[in-house]
Length: 179
Image (cartoon, rainbow, N blue to C red; front, side, top):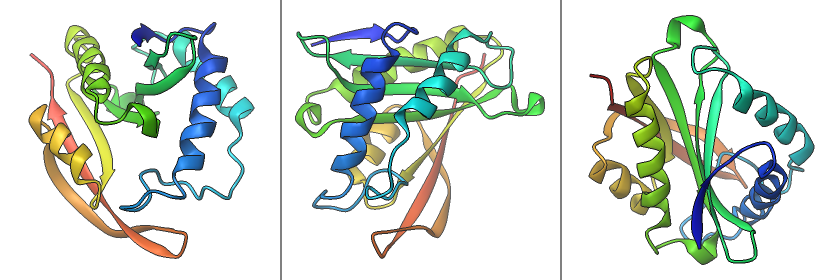
């Protein structure tokens, strides 16, 4: 396994990973980990098109994005971490973080390694001062990792999602990375 910055060339492999990752959302023992109904079709082509643009934009653009991935020896993406601007120039000092690992690579330290790469990038960018994320309340493993990295809980939205008939609380966490 190895870590790589995601560029336009690697994006199709990442899109395939995201499709597999969303399918796993249906049968997690502790509950879903992503805010998507696994029975709704995931439009990989649409996501690919959006990310192709995001990756080319400068960090100063309110629609930029950057992504990192963990790849197996066959070049298949098994996990990703991304940061993306939140779409408003007035929020250019904040980014939203997303992460997804396929079941086979969880619990092996890859999530932390991806997050470290991502957070190092954010700390190196003068414009970025805050990293925000959302995590489901029942995802205690992820929440513990984020707390170890210094993220603080700033709020909980009760029943923000209903996935497969199950209400899911969403925890908002943030980390200051500015100077």
